[in-house]
Image 1: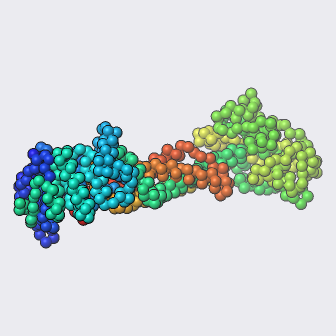
Image 2: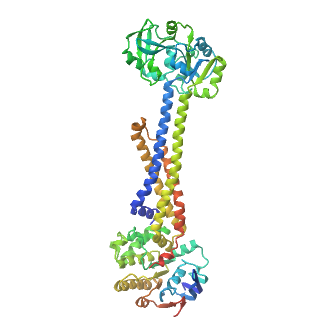
Image 3: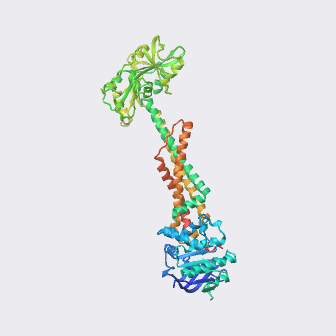
Length: 222
Length: 405
């Protein structure tokens, strides 16, 4: 088991009163699972992803990732866990606009300088594997949306994480490119046994998961 | 990828921000370096002028003023020449040289001149600027007590340096540069003063002082010419600065109780006032630069943070701690500070070197020690100005960028 939640609850204080975003969710995922989380807008999908990433803290309940209790870990410890074990893929790609493709992929390595040359070679290898080696000195704006998302995937993989959290990774792509990205993710999941948790609106994308979670009003329906 | 590389690439990417931030800090540091460079050279120039002026203590008759002495009125009071002997035979330390003088205003034709009787070598020794005219063939230095030549004026016998030395012929005179022009006199010409002919031994170089309007002849000749034998108007003394501080004036007053003993206060005060003014201006500019530079850099970093919110959120998301975000922004500020300090030093120094001779008539030379100081001050300003923006950047929550569509 790589990640587990117990009675996970997240409330927000809003001017109109208390908003329950996540309500008593119990989940556990194994290494190598491809999890898709679906649900209507405002159902709490992204909030759940943030909780699993240790980017926000739950109001109550527990989250355990690789034996770490994310609920009680310090901010620095959480950042350290993210940098070493978790990769992120976002809908808007979240690339650094002034860095080349290669430097964008190398960014997570700036937190861990050991074996930099080896890891740099690995970054080039990743770009080669997603067909962007010849574009590694280009800026993100010089790439298509699909290529930018592939760079984000390479960046998520460069630290050899155990878990990839993807928030609507195909949301900004046309259907053909979306399938292309989903295939890349599926390949990573199978070849590297990396757990992928992907939030999506798309029924097609959700089909890629071997574990499918549907959320409504902060609770798991399926 | 190392953090400094990320910072350098980002700096280069946003060139307009880089230039704006650097401009503020560079100009600020440049102004300080420029003012300080001028101030230092100005202080030196005043000190040199003081040295060239020679005497810094005046012994006058009790009833006289410095104005009386310089105006050389016909009825200006005098005192006995023997007073020179009193000082010479005393054991006072710090009296480097004395020059007894008798001055009177007279006319040669229609031209007013000041006839001044001097003991020649003493007079020459107390006015080093004249040494350049080749009057002694040896340039004297006036650095207080630091130079053996200065202490003995070339005489092996310490007592001799205090004695009046007569080395000008009784029928010779030295003339100031203005008098030379007015009377069209050159060396070896003959000039008649009060019915007596004098040969012009030397035309003195221009000093910009009252000496340019004087004719100098031997004291005893002048005394005889004016009919006031054994009397003098003043004794100019070149006193050692340290000795003056140690109470030389009061010791002189003890030896010559019926005289007025004073320093060249006006000159000294002017020098002190000029130096103080320059120093005050430097401090005022330093404070302004600290505030304006700090605010400018802080504002620039804050604008940078706002522009990079999404990027900072991304970095936090992939594992950058708040400390790493501080490091990125403060490293950027430090780089700006160091470059700004170096550029500021170069701009300030170059401005001084180029504009100094034109605007202030001073030849400004680079002061290398100001380079590390410029960098340190600039670094301090940049880091202080960036502390709050860096702190606020660390508070940017990474999840917010995940919630953006």
